[in-house]
Length: 166
Image (cartoon, rainbow, N blue to C red; front, side):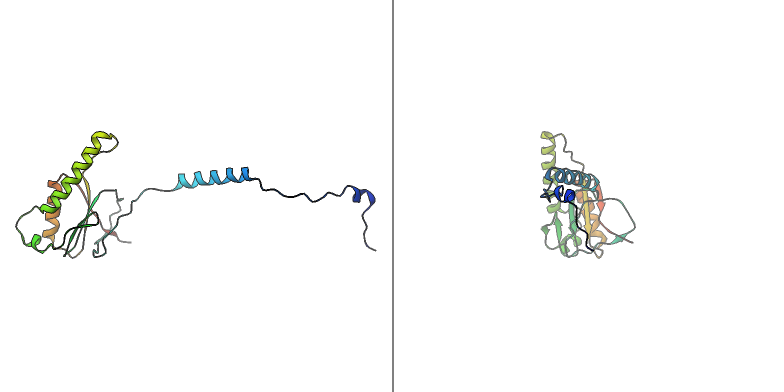
């Protein structure tokens, strides 16, 4: 025998209500989620762009990379922040001159620009940081000249970019 609802239950049966989306609550949840993700996002470790023709040496060093002027070089060319500065380093290696003039001039211009900005904006400070990205096959003589030239241009906080051994 089938069950039949009583008259009372028929009379008080609820009509299905339309469900509405509570947009205010969802916005609150997404705002909290966004703030949490932004707070937990790590901005440590800056990306370093390495020129395609350069194979960096490996090291066990684990220091973090700081944003700085980047000088990349291999057996053929010398780049400053990704821009070609010297297209043939052969004569530079063979020369007895320790200073690489195109590099010195470019670095001094960058340093002067940063110092000029620092005069107007106290939050900017010229730190003299430079990252040297040298191919593992370059002659030491070229590396020594680049280090010397960077020091002469006021970039005394020098770092060598390497791949970290695992």
